[in-house]
Length: 235
Image 1 (cartoon, helix red, strand yellow):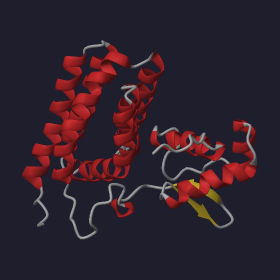
Image 2 (cartoon, one colour):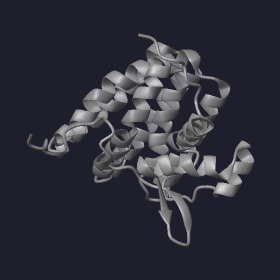
Image 3 (cartoon, rainbow, N blue to C red):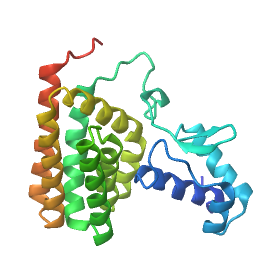
């Protein structure tokens, strides 16, 4: 009934560390990843070990090789089907937002209690980039996703982090799509930016109750906007 314990391979540890770099938004979609040689030197492992880890990230749809250019971080799509949902099931933005209400309101409360100074700095960096992108007439979606993933990592709860890692493709797709709808009324983007700052301020103040309320207000605002301005896809 018992089986031998197998220690993790080095390539597994490299894979997990590189995946976290992507999930935390430390290297954004569209940006070039470090070369095998650079990664091997920085991590103190062999190039074959790095290559194996990178190939797993490519298979997951997080990286792509471009002939003659290098390896790049890609924008996830729901086609990667991270949750193993039937391919004939239509995923609506409303569905995603309803699930996020449960996942992220609880997560941000934990983050407010447990976030380190480094976690808070990561969130601040995400919001600075998001604000700059919006000021330049862009959506700031990549920074938005990174902010919500930073909250997940700040919970220090391995189950929550695992769930959000597997939810990453859907989160990326949902936030990008939501912002495209919100962009039709630019004033709403200012509201969304203010809501993100309110969430960060509650985390910074270690106020778990206010953090949860601020996250609920934010997601509920977007959800109501989507219900008002888009038709729910037929199932």
